[in-house]
Amino acid sequence: MDRMPDERPRHIHSVEPVLHYLRQVCTHFQIASLNRPLEAAESLLVQNRPIDVAILGQFKAGKSSFLNSILGKPVLPVGAIPVTTAITRLQYGEKERVQVRHFDRSVTEVALADLPDYTSEAKNPNNRRNVEVVDIELPSLMPYAGLRLVDTPGLGSVFACHKSTSENWLPEVGAALMAVSSDRPLSENDLELIRELTQYTPNILLLLTKTDLLSTEQQDEVIAFFHQTLQRELNRDFPLYLYSTQVDTEHHKQRIEREILQSLSSNRDSEFQRILRHKTKSLLRSILGYLDIALQTALQADSDREGLRAQILNEQVNEELMREELGLIARENALQTRPMLKAYLDRFYGPLVEKTTARLEKDIPSWKGNLWQLSRHFEAWTSEVMTEEMWKISRSESPHFFGTLKKSHASFSRSLAAFRRFLDENIQKVLGIRLAEVDWSIDVAEPEHPDIIATKSFDIHLDLIWFLIPMFLFRKAFERHFVRCLPREVEMNLSRLAYQWEKRINAAIDSMKEQAVGYVRDELATIDALLSKTGGQSEEIRRITEELKEASERLES
Image 1 (tube, rainbow, N blue to C red):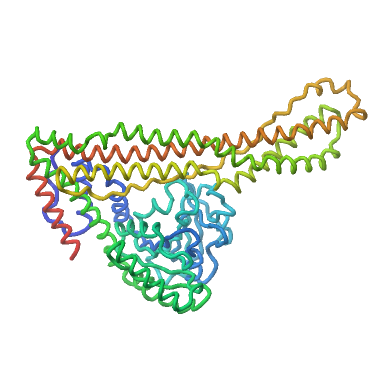
Image 2 (cartoon, rainbow, N blue to C red):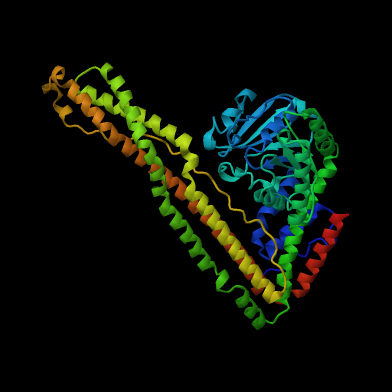
């Protein structure tokens, strides 16, 4: 293993050289597990962008309604179903402006009135327009210059697309308002999200929405429940704010503006540094944990280090076995995708046959021409109608198609948690130290809608001799024949729709498997390097550790 560069800073006073040094340490000791949070902190430092105040929480927690209330007008779409499909960021601008950034890096400038076409589930189902993020500039946000309010897709509502999921965006958070609805306060998922947020920001505030649903006594009970639960589960407490868009709105709004938004905005530079220091200190703690492993093994003789390595990287944390286990999870769930889709789509067969039959019987009398022309009419009509009907089903019912995707995600997560637990137990047993915490969230990319093009399966040879068939005698018979063909057309196109979704869902399952394999591979490579390649570096590791501890103390001051 190469030695650390000689030009490393002897005394580290500010965040920038600390991050530079942490990058050197991670590269030197091959700590691949921390790449993502390290990149987020480096990006924040370089861009010096506005502080992102993220509104996070489960779906239908009232996040968009809260932001509209703060803005004083209905900028963001709201509805009775989970609405937000893409990250939406709002900040001050001299004039009203909306820019839609797509995953292909193209940018579309749209009117504010057209925003729902890009960010709402109703008009952009499953993010079919491939929107990565929407940036909105509003003159009314001048009092909060230096801040960027961020509306996120509700966690647990639908699978968000690509890397723009709320969970994957967490390392970017500067301050977090965790919205919890009064009608289902503080679930296990909320606690897990708060726990993860503590790695990324020192500014975590709880927002209890829809408080008009509770009486004053019930509000007091819920507040007490919040404080007790947070102390019991996380051993800490967080500021709690009440909010309702129906009752005492102005009072709630003024308190949040005064104590959160105006405070952050007026102290933007110091808050920015505080947030960046927090992210850097989280990285420091994780790296020090890995260096503990490196130091313990560096002190051993070569033969002893190999023995330690064998005890820690035993069969329970074997990469090949984990790859097989994760592959088995993917294959088992992929095999269930088609039967699950078929079982769900079968319910549409009868109603769709009835609907298309009635439509054909209404349309067919207006068709003119001989048998050949009539056959072409039928083919074109079938293609158009089936494409339309398959699109309707695909668009409205797709949230019900993801059963095996959800099962796979849960199984992969459990498998990774077990792997991580075994590895942690081995390290504690052999070295007496805990494994450093890392973010192993598996991102779920919802499959894009397939291009729905109906099959043309109608086959009739009689139209080749159309000139011999008197239509005035046989037209009714041919019309009945076309009607009798419809059930087969419906069956074939439902089957094709299932196949198209099966391919996309199974590709998403395979993508999750590769993410999980990557986590395992990177972690084992990191541990292997620390166990096998740190001989003779004990003094250097001690020196680096002391410098990092010194840096951590300086960041505290």
